[in-house]
Image (tube, rainbow, N blue to C red; front, side, top):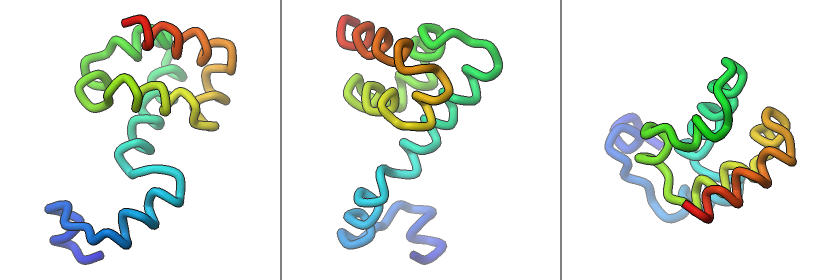
Amino acid sequence: MGFFSRLFGNKDEGEGAAEAQRGGSSKEEALAAYIVREHKQGRSLEEILDDPYLKNRASEEQRIRLLERPEVIRAIGEDTAEMARDRVRKS
Protein backbone atom coordinates (compact mmCIF):
# COMPACT_ATOMS: atom_id res chain seq x y z
CA MET A 1 0.00 0.00 0.00
CA GLY A 2 1.36 3.41 -0.91
CA PHE A 3 2.03 6.32 1.38
CA PHE A 4 -0.98 8.37 0.29
CA SER A 5 -3.27 5.36 0.43
CA ARG A 6 -2.27 4.77 4.05
CA LEU A 7 -2.52 8.46 4.82
CA PHE A 8 -5.97 8.95 3.32
CA GLY A 9 -7.34 5.47 3.99
CA ASN A 10 -7.81 4.33 0.40
CA LYS A 11 -7.82 0.56 0.76
CA ASP A 12 -8.92 -1.86 -1.85
CA GLU A 13 -11.07 -4.81 -0.83
CA GLY A 14 -8.23 -7.31 -1.04
CA GLU A 15 -6.18 -5.51 1.58
CA GLY A 16 -9.17 -5.13 3.88
CA ALA A 17 -9.95 -8.84 3.64
CA ALA A 18 -6.32 -9.76 4.33
CA GLU A 19 -6.31 -7.44 7.34
CA ALA A 20 -9.46 -9.06 8.71
CA GLN A 21 -7.91 -12.51 8.37
CA ARG A 22 -4.88 -11.38 10.41
CA GLY A 23 -7.15 -10.76 13.36
CA GLY A 24 -8.22 -7.16 13.20
CA SER A 25 -7.38 -3.70 12.12
CA SER A 26 -4.56 -1.49 13.18
CA LYS A 27 -7.22 0.64 14.94
CA GLU A 28 -8.29 -2.35 17.01
CA GLU A 29 -4.67 -3.23 17.74
CA ALA A 30 -3.99 0.35 18.86
CA LEU A 31 -7.02 0.36 21.15
CA ALA A 32 -6.01 -3.00 22.63
CA ALA A 33 -2.52 -1.63 23.26
CA TYR A 34 -4.11 1.42 24.91
CA ILE A 35 -6.09 -0.79 27.30
CA VAL A 36 -3.01 -2.85 28.18
CA ARG A 37 -0.81 0.22 28.66
CA GLU A 38 -3.34 2.07 30.82
CA HIS A 39 -3.95 -1.03 32.94
CA LYS A 40 -0.21 -1.48 33.48
CA GLN A 41 -0.07 2.14 34.66
CA GLY A 42 -2.52 1.24 37.42
CA ARG A 43 -5.88 2.35 36.03
CA SER A 44 -8.82 0.08 36.73
CA LEU A 45 -10.47 -1.60 33.79
CA GLU A 46 -13.73 0.16 34.66
CA GLU A 47 -11.99 3.53 34.44
CA ILE A 48 -10.36 2.63 31.13
CA LEU A 49 -13.66 1.46 29.60
CA ASP A 50 -15.35 4.70 30.70
CA ASP A 51 -12.54 6.78 29.22
CA PRO A 52 -13.86 9.10 26.47
CA TYR A 53 -10.79 8.23 24.36
CA LEU A 54 -11.92 4.61 24.14
CA LYS A 55 -15.68 5.26 24.02
CA ASN A 56 -15.28 7.76 21.16
CA ARG A 57 -13.28 5.29 19.10
CA ALA A 58 -15.07 1.99 19.68
CA SER A 59 -18.68 0.88 19.76
CA GLU A 60 -20.02 -1.41 22.47
CA GLU A 61 -19.46 -4.42 20.22
CA GLN A 62 -15.91 -3.32 19.42
CA ARG A 63 -15.11 -2.78 23.11
CA ILE A 64 -16.38 -6.28 23.90
CA ARG A 65 -14.23 -7.66 21.08
CA LEU A 66 -11.22 -5.79 22.49
CA LEU A 67 -11.79 -7.57 25.81
CA GLU A 68 -11.56 -10.91 23.99
CA ARG A 69 -8.11 -10.25 22.52
CA PRO A 70 -5.40 -12.51 24.01
CA GLU A 71 -3.03 -9.68 24.91
CA VAL A 72 -5.80 -7.82 26.77
CA ILE A 73 -6.91 -10.98 28.58
CA ARG A 74 -3.35 -11.68 29.67
CA ALA A 75 -3.00 -8.12 30.93
CA ILE A 76 -6.22 -7.92 32.90
CA GLY A 77 -7.12 -11.52 33.58
CA GLU A 78 -10.00 -13.59 32.27
CA ASP A 79 -12.29 -12.96 35.26
CA THR A 80 -11.88 -9.23 35.01
CA ALA A 81 -12.57 -9.37 31.27
CA GLU A 82 -15.82 -11.29 31.82
CA MET A 83 -17.05 -8.78 34.41
CA ALA A 84 -16.19 -5.93 32.07
CA ARG A 85 -18.05 -7.52 29.11
CA ASP A 86 -21.15 -7.78 31.30
CA ARG A 87 -20.74 -4.15 32.37
CA VAL A 88 -20.40 -2.92 28.77
CA ARG A 89 -23.54 -4.80 27.77
CA LYS A 90 -25.47 -3.15 30.62
CA SER A 91 -24.28 0.40 29.88
